[in-house]
Amino acid sequence: MERSPDPPTPREVRLRELRPGDPPVEFVARVVAVERREVTRKSDGGRRPLLSGLLTDGTATVRFTWWDPPREGIERGTVLRAVAPEVGEFRGRPEVTFSWKSRVGPASEAELPRVDPTSLPHRPVAELRPSDDGFRVIARVIRSAERSVAVGEERRAVFEGLLADPSGTVAFSAWTDFRLRPGEAVEVVGGYVRSFRGAPQLVLDERSSVRRVDVEGLPPVDSILQAPPLLMAEAERRGGSGVFAVEGRVVALLPPSGLVYRCPQCRRSVTAGLCRVHGAVTGEPDLRARLVLDDGTGSVTVNAGRAETERLWGTTLEACRARLRELPDPATLEGELLEAVLGRRLRVRGTATKDDFGITLVPESLEPTEVDLESTAEQLGARIGVGRP
Ligand SMILES: [Zn+2]
Image (cartoon, rainbow, N blue to C red; front, side, top):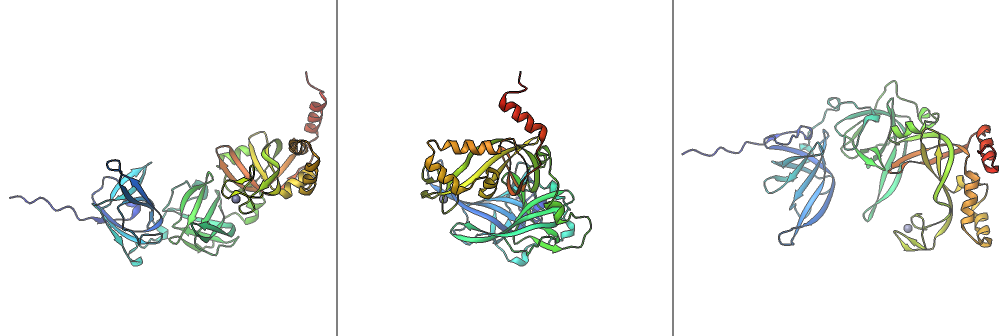
């Protein structure tokens, strides 16, 4: 009688070696993101628990899905040994599913593979794309600041900033304090890339390591923070991330601009006495201007805050509120703001984000540039009807 062959012994691999369709494998990796959900079964309406998230071992980060996981004990930071997971593919990247056929359980830190940083490919920051991992970056820290964010019920510190190498800049966020200081040259290993407000962002976590390096050829901090203005078409081509300056003319004012009311708790604008997070609140008055700047190659939106708006408008929040008490129509105020800014040439340096509507800059500096006589004449002409057919 012939015995059926034993199933092949799983081969231990690194995450970057995972390929759909390979014989059974085994790996050790850390959970870097995890979310617990329940999925309703179509057959009987019962609820089936599901964990999903990201695993990394320093060579790659892969998505995982875990059906009927343990009730507890699996959280961010947990090291797992997974034997015989199903390896699939999503958008060309491997991902794993743990089902009844797999054996998955906690493992110790010591079982995590040691990754030799020099074995990872060096990547220019401008070439990083969302969900990339398993690379090395050598860059200068341009800025770094700590921010406190709400994660569920608790507050956590996150360190955010900007890295630059000769190819360009990339924003980063770190959940661990790597004590990054502006000006330092660093080699970063074990980060991964996510999409944040439409731009790639390098994410560093406990698995990442940062080493100070002594290398030539990285751009100095000032060359990034004080670089001459970019053409807007070039800013769009770069994907709109990072910190840069543009120079252009105000061609439009987007709502809400002018006198706005903000939620005292979260600073979101309040519409009809309602904050979309905090409900009914007493809005606090503020001034803002959402300016569309155009330089002939493209356009960007500039979100000017109170101080910049007051300066451009030549009026103060208090004066606006006083005027409002006398004005029959509050829209008059917005019209006056438009009048004050339209056609002005501005140089704006700030942090860019990108969405479906294009690039938005949050200004760190905003300066009117010298009067462009030709166009001023043109505008005056247009206003008084000269030069039109
Ligand atoms: Zn609010």
